[in-house]
Length: 337
Image 1 (tube, rainbow, N blue to C red):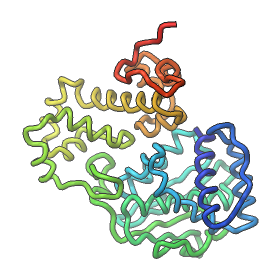
Image 2 (image 1 turned 90 degrees about the vertical axis):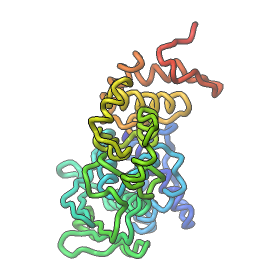
Image 3 (image 1 turned 60 degrees about the horizontal axis):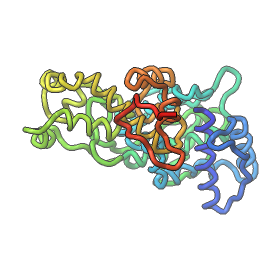
Image 4 (image 1 turned 90 degrees about the horizontal axis):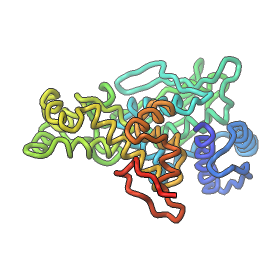
């Protein structure tokens, strides 16, 4: 997972650097895999030759990468808090040696520190790359008038008015303060309790509108659609009820025939994972993250309960080398030798 994440970030960096006329020689990867040390060496070389500002601007390519399930799952975030929670879950999922720690939450700001293991903090180029990606994700997820400062003793404004203006200072370059004037409706409350049901960055409908739209309709089908649109979200029964404009207890009763809230959530996530497993070559770890599982063991365990197969075996059984796939709705059928 960490190797794939490194390779994906490297791909974004190459694209952004090429747009600026910077032709840096990247290390050769083994398919989607890249040792993290190779990524660090590449970024350090770019920083030596061209400075940190080009790396900060790498996130500018994200708006054109929404077909990537990893990027799409991050861009589905409902505002800054949800975004940081998703990013931190991604770090936990991939067992990243570097972590973002939220030091302070505010209604219109977040203070985040990018840290590493004792005695091995992230290098300046690594800080710059992650800061640039997080800043881009923040703006794309709907936060307005984003301003970013970096540093501890004498913070420097590194991003304002939509532009990166200075690299993070050293030392303290991994301490970042994100501020914004407004965020999408639903941000600032417990993740999963409300939020957008449309495109990333667009506010969700009001409770009254949701209630009118859900009246007399099949709550099971609507619930499936909501979860399937964003399986990476930390869904709760209360959050679904708020989206549909119905009391939580009423929704639980209506979902009982489909296995209840927990059963339906598990089913939709496993269906989404099965679809990605057989219809693409995305790494299994990335599929687990975008489908809302906590980590790789959780993905393997929960997916196995639904299909009687591990994700890897499921892919090998149902993915056709010629591009055709078996039906994802029949997870336990095996090809006849």
